[in-house]
Image (cartoon, rainbow, N blue to C red; front, side, top):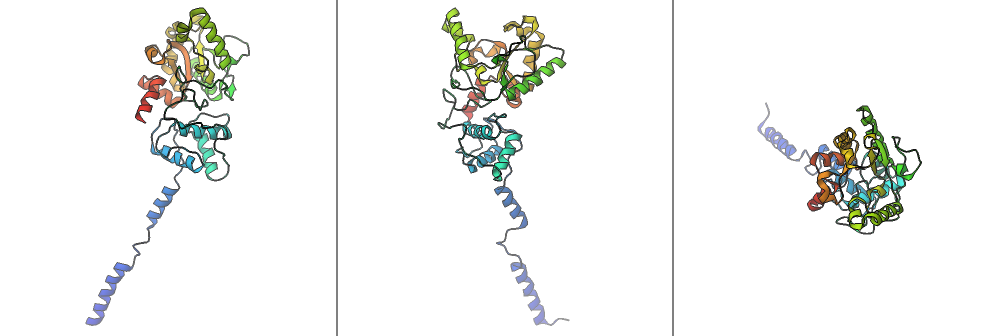
Length: 332
């Protein structure tokens, strides 16, 4: 049996060990893991695009800042984020330039982050200003989501660098520029045509890329025939034509004798296109119920590539591209 003195000694020793046996100032293993996770956040795996607001965008912007790009340190995917990604894509992904964030862009950013590649900011796309809203002439004509209309024009010297001829039907055989689209849009158009074929339909591609000079000739001819006010309701001034982006294709069919007419919208192909174009990244750019907003007449044949995510969003919410921009500019 323990004597009284020994018992007291053991009792107080246990109390002291309980108080000082663990260093309160030393972080636990869990805390260390949390700190490492915070300091080494992985680049987002999800696709991101202009006007997205998400924690993933914050991570993306942080990485762009670390590479030397002067983007905003926020959760908003704005024009500066688009500019930085475009500049990087032009340097490392010349056949995949969009201004959007996807798997290919993530791979390049990871290589840059690991110092496997070197980057020079503004090597391919100069940033001339910090736009809170789109300028009159866009700084970034490579942006797949660029708004091009009567208020927002493309530079007169802009020619897409990745133009190709999609493997689809045309009602003519001549090898002319209007067969061309940017590679990303061309691939999507091939998928759209394949799906329409499987639905028992027969679409034809009529007119794609159009240069600034070619658009000027077309517009001047229309003005000479119908006057400028009328011509401007169905024909764009040079620089204001989406065809110059290389992201647009006018489509038609045999039923309307391969013409570009509103009657196309009443055909089986026209109806299918209206209901399914978004599944392949295209929108009917000038819908019948948005004439007052787009400032152009109804054109069921004019499809514009914006990517599947935005195309589906616009389709599901019955929004024009102008409404999408206005909504997001007001919110951000």
